[in-house]
Length: 196
Image (cartoon, rainbow, N blue to C red; front, side, top):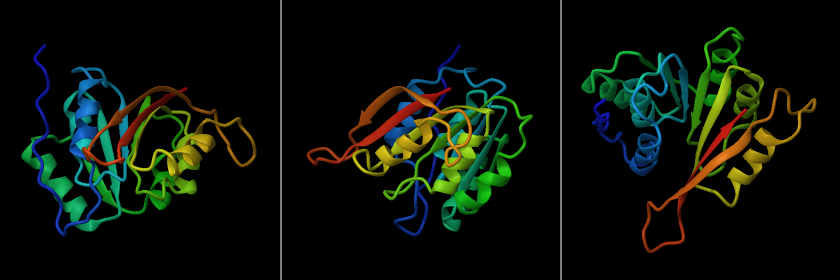
């Protein structure tokens, strides 16, 4: 099978809009062969201009839902899907903590993968709880720009034992990869894959 092509994307305007870093998309591309997501639904949280979700849709995901609170980024994500002729993707302009409890409430969904690329403060607890409660989410890919801070807190919640404050089966980390987006600085992105 031919290797999937890279996603052709425009950055969002105005500058500063949340978007998935190209290197994180590249990390996802390197670990996802064509057809690997066949039959899976993908939820791309804090999706920015949609590059990771569009890529997942192009390698076999049955449907991708992108959630992003920055309206210009969502508009660019829709344009990027059209530019790449990807039709099995939908983008919603909403806060993750408001959209995910609704989007993930149907327990009869096909197997799902969630991708989260939150801001430095991390994933809103309500969004993390919705992901953890949804049994269909079998794989979680967490892209962190704050691996020594908010990532640690979020993983403690997502991977901790089940309790009244942590409903649903916990995830377990299966892979972590640092991505150096800012050479000659101490800053790196960390991509962590969790499964259950």
